[in-house]
Length: 226
Image (tube, rainbow, N blue to C red):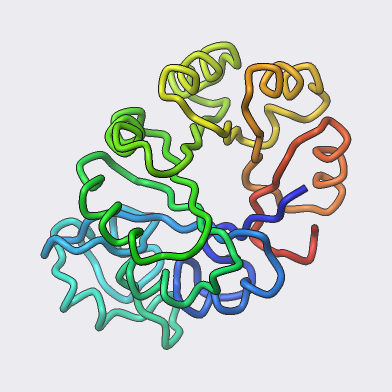
């Protein structure tokens, strides 16, 4: 079972920062980070649309220029919101990178940045348009993200399989509770040619339950539980 560090490994360092991926890299098979466009056009690593939860700033990321973003502190630390290119440079070549696309319209710039990466790369998203854009280039395997609370995003497992198949994905990325006690779902995904990486797992006991149903990878905030 592969271990994927969620937002680096958010329990160990400020999420989606260079420090997070540096700390996680010796302990995980892959790091997962979120990418979106900022107000001056660069691709930056940030999960949230707005700055207030994690930084000492305010407003929307897509309305804030990078020159301002790099002044903000993440989680009251010395870490800053990094450019995607700077964060990728901190990930050793032997550690994979799962880039979650937070919205469509970034495929060209994203793929240009990834051209310089020697790592294995997976591109994932809840946004089917974002996946379609990068999938049209066919350069990296795709992962379809979905959860159980919103029907159109995959409460129905069959819908998720169909969407992932239509997008030519290699991976399903379900919210982990969709897999617990449901080995037939994971078997159905494997039979359709998908690997399954479940998110976001908090406890070692849950990791073992997911291992028992055949999940291929777990996305975690703390590598210790795997």
